[in-house]
Image (cartoon, rainbow, N blue to C red; front, side, top):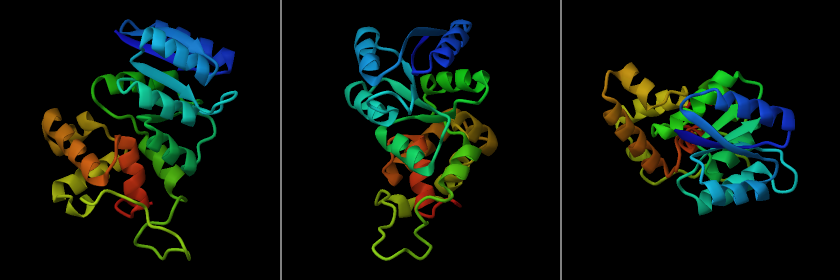
Length: 223
């Protein structure tokens, strides 16, 4: 049973998510919170597996909330919910420790599937959405930089990606999780997960989402 905390200040949506989660035999909504402070108090009490985190919250926003939760509760997977995605928010969410970035107006079936992914060791990325969001972000390292602009910082091992790891990175950029990568490349899921972990390590990323953002900004993936 995967336990979920919903952090959303719009009560109608919070209640709808709570009901949707409750209909699933393998999911359990342990509560809802309207603020980061309330969320932190509930996480301390019930230790959920997954947190659905809205970005726009009264007081402390969801990005800072994600950072605080990640710093104190490394075992909690945080999925960002937003109705107003921007490249900056995607990058900030990834850097804060979020493992997924989901649209509020998407079907509940996608959200429920995303909740299950972190529990199977997978990182949630909606490839088309990520590509759309980050295509106008910091120019790729291969393009001319503006005066005073710094290139995107990736791990020092990024240049040592093997041909297979480059292939895996490309599929990560399409939004594929390790299971889908394994199927596409005719590999075992265990092997695919190993390649994903190596790519993340070489890029200096903590999550698959952060790896895709860093790789795109650094010109390792098409923007």
